[in-house]
Length: 218
Length: 180
Image (cartoon, rainbow over all chains, first blue to last red):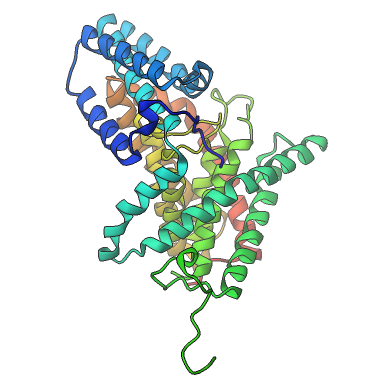
């Protein structure tokens, strides 16, 4: 599946997805409650150790971190100019620790495990009128169609580049938009033709038959 | 919600993700490069309406959070949401909703200018109102100075609102999805 997961069998890989997400959430709150360069520096060391334990390649980590680094430099410069450099170092360290922890969770957890956690969390939403099976269905459709539409987008980009139109946002977006609308139409027709009932509580992939035949009509 | 609504919600989430393929566009005069992807917010709102548009972006944010590399530059994961620019990403959900809500109100006499107004209010004002305070908080920075610093992105965002309005107008004429 199209995801950032790096397979492995470290103790960190083996922590259940829900547990990892809860720990990350707690850590993100705690990070903003403590302060001090020494404290955050020690946390950074700890996180580096966790990455060693997980056995993750540095290349993947750095690739995810790079866009954030672009932000950390101006944040640091901002503090040097307007407040003081110590607060700058502390802020940058705190963001770095937070980002690295989140990247650790992302790289060591399977997408399917994350989705399972989501489905469990979405379960109680039933009581406020949200059908969890619909949520799960939309998630799986989106996951399925992301790589498909990306291929379409790349083809459109190449076709428009050949015409010298690859800097023209309209020339890129309209064909992609029309393809998307057409795909959505075809997909909903296909679902309905196969008897998918959006109101049914049981997800379609958990049923044995596509539609139950009432007794006596067999 | 019908099956059709569900497929539109899912496919517009995928459409926003697919926009990650388009490289940032550098326009003369505009200081910061334009990230094409944010336009998905405006498109989902102005083509699908408030409820479906908001849901579609919520789905997109969930996909980012669970670790699909679908943001420009192939980023993803919870780190993006918790990081300095996380507020901008989260704001896309209410932003698409607001764009859609305004478009639904204007639907009967919807033209380029009403679409542009909806996209500017939802796609720019709402996004900045959530994203900038978040950035200021995470960066430990002064709110006023963060607002000034973010101003470099306004010209690019206005161009995006214009493009999204054109696109939505074309779709409205040939393929109207909001009936009211």
